[in-house]
Amino acid sequence: MKRKSEALPKRYHVLNLDTCMRCTLCANICPTYIASGDLKVAPASRIKLIKSFMEGKGENLTRELCTEAFRCTLCGRCMESCPFSIRTVDLWYLLRYYTCKAGKRPETLDSFEERLLSNRNPYGADSSLRTYWAEMLGISDPSGLTPRKAKVVLFMGCTPAYRSVAQDTLGAAVALLNKLKESWTTLGNDEWCCGCPLLMLGNREAAAEFARHNVEAVKAVDASVLVTICATCYKMFKLEYEELLGGPLPFKVLHLTELLSKYVTELN
Amino acid sequence: MQWMTVLTAVAHTALLIFVIGVIYRLARWLRASSSTNFRAQGLSFGEWVKVIANVFLDLVFMRKVFRSDEVFGTVVWLMHMVVLVLLVGHLRAFGVWSAEAIGEGPRWLFLGLIPTALGWLLFFLLLFLFVRRVRLTPARSMLTLGDVVLYALLLSGVLCGNLMRLLPTSHEAFQWRIFPWLTLSLEHAPNLAAFSLHVVLLSALLAYLPFSPLVHIFSGIVSSILHYKWRLQVAKYSLGGVSLEEEERSFT
Image (cartoon, each protein chain N blue to C red):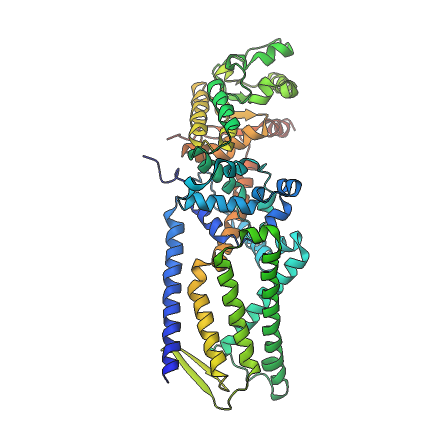
């Protein structure tokens, strides 16, 4: 049975929707609306869509109309401009959730999600290649890349692991952890995507499944701290996982910069 | 007088519908699920002061509205301030405050000219806001029948209130016992047609309030408080404490 705390919408969603005065100051600041001039992409139109879903009229909405939910960049400028500080970004996530449940997402996103679910990363890359970046960087001491019992888990993240643009950062993180003689490990090929793309696709159930897996993987190595170099992964672990899993995490979550700050303080 | 009985019935019905409406809204909000907030730490007194200060700046001084659109911000702020002043002025008729402190000389100004001018200012500010709604493309796309009804009630109610001041009044005092605990007393009986319409229209507004965007009067404050509270809690949770020796929390 779904826990009351996991059910959507939340109280603040309903309160926020009722508070909206339709002043449309959000539209004035929306980069997508300003660039396209398309009313369907304005925040105000998304409010109408959410209300339709909440009133049980989602069946009457076309797939084309629901696609507008995904043209939002989730930048949050609307939230900052709202006179009542309505948490609009949370409402847009809610809309994507409804759209996903109703099966009205754009088809391209459906196929993207399929690849993400089967490969556990958004790039469709083989999950067994998750630590291949170390070989590419010629890391001489690969211990830690294979999961082992350790105090700190270095959560690699999909972009650093699979994309050359950020692999250097991972390499640097490993070098720093080794230099500091920290007890660390990665989750190796057992690391799954943090789940943020799934949340953005509106698939909360799959995002929760990924979260559950990652947390169990961290528990399996007895780590008490999870460190990430990716801001998105950090946000997911820090702010979303507890909500998705309905309970506190059994480990602390830090960004690498926070961990390094701790060491700098201690060294000083 | 029969029409006074009718007015009293209208006021009572409006209040009843208002109360039912408030209960309906609260039930709607409470029926939804609560947020999981395991990271929620209580805010200290100083942090609550920060929250309230931000809410005050946003809602009383319309900080965010001014930032987005200075003209719109000015109009909206002025409209709300005028409503506040007029509502305070109305309380005199219910005995909440007395004008005895105001000397005979300046009475015509503080009880006559200024409230009359404010009433007309309010009317034209509301009209401006309605015209903005109709003219601006995103706002027009969001316009609902409910919004039109709301503006109609507001504009017509305010207009009737203004007409009460323009149309001839009687020299006789006027009293209306709305509830056993609430009596309206006026030094001069107003034009009764304008008065009756004013009461009916604003009673309808009161009844409609919980079902209309005007619910923002209450929910806007809560929404704003929740946002600034959340921001502080996230900042505290994200940035507070980098101890690696923190005790493991159980996961259930």
